[in-house]
Length: 342
Image 1 (spheres, rainbow, N blue to C red):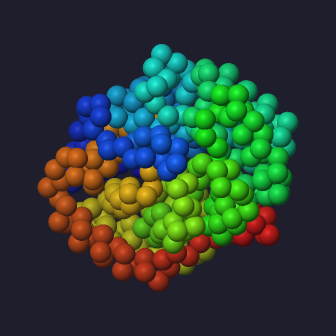
Image 2: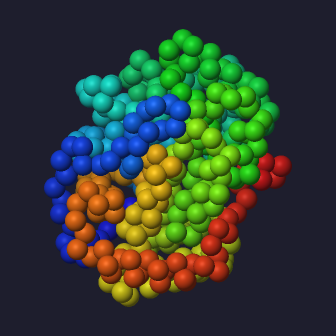
């Protein structure tokens, strides 16, 4: 959640970082990893969305760890390796057994994808160096809908399992937008080939279709990202390139305005909604300042009953009203990647 108004909690937000351990943990499927329900999405540390002061970004990571966030996710694609570098600098003096770290392979630019075994192997080695760690807890094939899925299955995943056998990677999986492709790849692979799946924009107020996929995942660990649907559920709105249909953009803008008119703030309600389902182990949110960390942690803590929320009744009313506004476009999505992967 970014761009907070003064009424983020219906009052001026407290800037103090909550005490360590405030956030609940969930088990990430068959991996057995315990991850915080709120994860630190490090794409912003690469300056992907706005200019970043690296020192402030490092302080955000430290504040997140202190507040009980133990799951950090990055990729060499984010800021063209800058995210990994900044995150590695931030985490270098923190005991490795106190956090879970994931990165990705296969995507290296807006239109640069390579899921070959050789590139995947080299990519992990490079990420380990930038992140300054001896191993990665999770490595995901990144945005596989843009690549040759057969190559992902026959080259990339076996290469990651070879690295797993060497102790350089603990758990492997993939990320993508189309849910049908997630199901297809899971069915195509052998049991045990995939430990973790990362889905985005499908566990939000406007699209909760990820929950329909749960029976197909078995004990695969599930991570969700983009609870704001890439800006749809924020006052700032979407960038020009956002692929959502106009009807979805219009409905989300109306929902944002309605929440504001009722004295509430839709991104906070959206984040609370996204972290609610126990099968979703962690929800990744982009954060680049200690203030954003504190506010996201507070919002999730209130949503899950870790701390009292005196405005829970109002929030429940506004949430129901917003869901009515979004009902005509609920679960409407958009294509991503190659046509044959949608």
